[in-house]
Image (cartoon, rainbow, N blue to C red; front, side, top):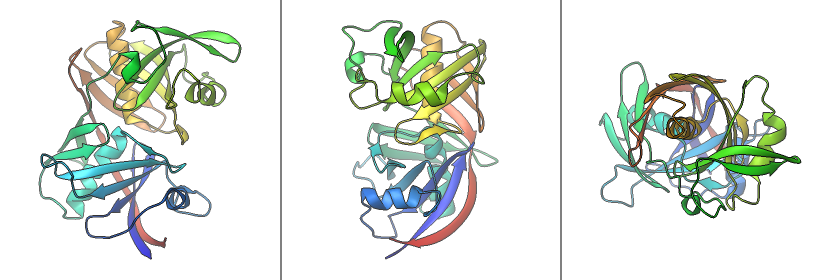
Length: 276
């Protein structure tokens, strides 16, 4: 069948967005891999699917698939693109949109100049809920990586993140350490690996090696995880600018039990169709 899609990105984190409200299709893992393939398909970090909600309190259901075909729980840059997509496709006229995800309902607020504010999840630091194999919650943990013990933070934003503080993101061994952290046995569902450079209390740089996608130009949930971890360690202030390879995001977090608020841009690249 012919499937219509929109290619979008949020500061370089790119997506194939598919409307399954007005179209009907059952996407298999191999279909996702075909769509995401940058040589033989459309090419993207993640495939985002818009569906009717299953929860009566939501306007839409938002499903996220990594390039390897695995469905995952959350994607903050994708959530912003999702909000712009459903408005431009006239699936809703709302500027405040409630969206059902695999990790709960999130709120998207459409602002001016194609920016979107996302009320992300409440950060979860309890190891069993990340999930992360550790006897008890701690400020940091030690992982054996490439023969060396490395200090990390662990937090869930609805999806798992490991944070490694580095002196310089430019010099960080993301290509070498990223896959090792992603598949570390202490993270039973694998993990997104973030390499964070604290420049000041209001500014950090970040690179993220994502589960099933590799290093991406930006990771919204990774930015949220890094800010929450940095604030929990008293390295950062309540409001922080995060610079990723693809651009900048504005984030704020009020502390334990509060959601992270993320604001950033969206972009439409092109529209097309493909046989599935």
